[in-house]
Image (cartoon, rainbow, N blue to C red; front, top):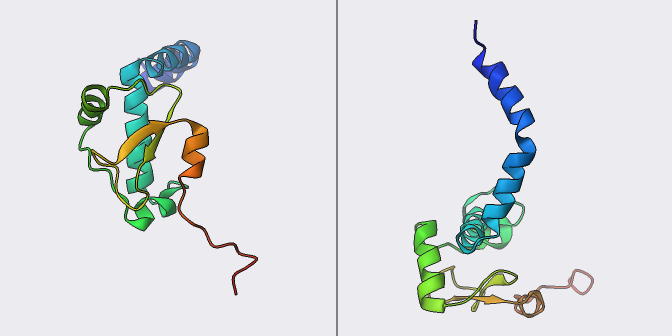
Length: 124
């Protein structure tokens, strides 16, 4: 008798490296890179289990792009930027991920665009 579960487990074990290689190749394309960014952005805003949710969705930050295709179209047609190697950034940290409030910057610029934090040693 054919055991589909056993077959699939063995198939995945054998083709694991091929799948990883193809996945990495896809993410290096422009569409793959932007789709990955969109998914990470949605997770930070919508998934309470995400480690950074408290800094995004927990603060009321939302993603106003409904689909990854809408996000990709905005980046390629409106911003006309090559985002690979750059990080997504909100121009105004208190506003949402929305058209007119996102840009792609170097990691150094992104680190300088943070909201003020209270230093625990000075509080109280």
